[in-house]
Image 1 (cartoon, rainbow, N blue to C red):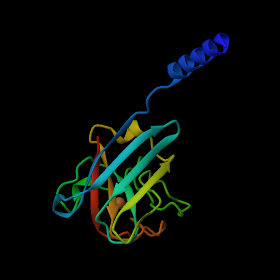
Image 2: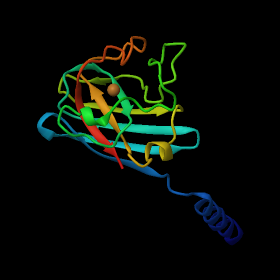
Image 3: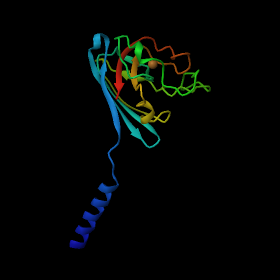
Length: 166
Ligand SMILES: [Cu+2]
C-alpha cells in the first residue's frame, strides 16, 4: 500500500514538473460605442493557437472573424486594426481559396438568438508570438459571414466587435 502511495506521489510530481502553463493573451471584446461585448482569449498551442470567443450583443446568425494586423481597436469602427495578419503581400484571402496566404483567416462563428456566441477556434496558420509583435494584433468580428473565397475579406462586411490581443 505504501509503495503504491509513494508511486502515486512520484507520478504526480513528475506530471506537475512536466506541465507548464500555456501562454495566453487576449482582452475585452468591444462593440459600437466601445460597449462591452465579451472576451477573447488566444492560447499558444504547439502548432498554432486556440482562440476562445465569448461574445455578446451580436446579430443572430453567422459572422466572419479574423486576426487583424494591429493591436488597435480605435475608433469604434475598428479601422485602425488594419488588414488581416499576413506575412506576404498581397495576401489572398479565404480558407477555401487555393491561393490563400492570409494568416488571419478563421472559420465563422454563430451567434444564437440572444446574440451570444461561444466558440474555440484552432488555427495552425499563425503562432502567438507573431501575433504579439511590436504593433500587436486584434480579433475582429464582422457583420456578415465570410464566404472564405471572395476578396478581400470574404464579403464579411463591416466590423462589429474588436479585441486587442495583448
Ligand atoms: Cu476581418
